[in-house]
Image (cartoon, rainbow, N blue to C red):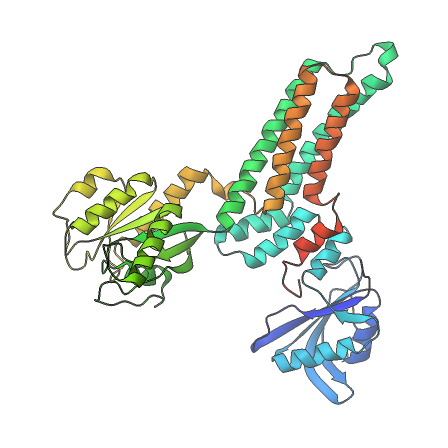
Length: 452
């Protein structure tokens, strides 16, 4: 890893009240002392008021905070400049910093990468830093913050301790084989291996759920033309995203928007009205609607209370038969209540009187979405903000557990059992980053934003 001095803005490049610039690396205090003028002395963990100067004169009045190694985010000597949030000022300060020898612009995620290399956090905690920044729901933020503070790490360390104890007992039996001392019976070892397998399967499930939910739950709004689907989308996201018109067939393509419902990240899809049409472009939209219906985790099936249940509605009801998670919205309740045809009421559990004008039924929709997500994913709020790498490593760990149990059940030599345990332990080390290749690390940290 390059140990030179790095710098980058830690805030967005837009006009704002304040901006923050980070600098990290051995010797960076010397740079601060050359560009920063203050009546106060620069001290560890104290914000000092002063001004930044370059060869042309005053750049800006700022607050500077210095952290000595290893008591910083990166574990290196670090300072942060809080200046006015004009991008021109930020750029001028960055150019001044880059004028110093051995100083360069940080690559994406490099501050966190240095924190990882310097032992300030392991890989699961480092990935959680990015998850906090990218989170699109309250659950993701909460889960990522807990993971930053070691929630997943503690689980993995507990398993590693159990495996180390089991392996030491097995290897002790190898060392004292001539004395015929039995440090652990096969029966006891099998029981412990099965318990470890159950724990790993639980972690795998919680990570898999977290990985899926972090991408958002797909919710498709389905119905005939002019039933109010676009109005419902606009109301749910609180924005005029979709065109609303009395002319049937206005929506010709899928419109996707994200929203948070009960702390859950949800992807809403406004679809083209499903009907028989001779219009070639509308036909394409209708086919995409049917695909969205098949792919979505939850369907908001919208029906018009003014028209009652039409033949087009009945065809849609037939299309819904293969889907398990359906919330029926009887729309336009502000104009008229009660459907003449009770077919819908006989088939579905979640039926809501809804109005995209008054918001009637919104709370019931949110409750139904939360209930369906909970029914499908269990207590998702206890899951981890894992990526596919972590999920796949836990899958591999389960496979190694099964192999270890087979070896023990067959009472194969202790050397083979010890080897299986070493493989299993190494997989857990890969998750936390104790064993990692540069390619894997580069792939992870380049997904971070610059300045983090």
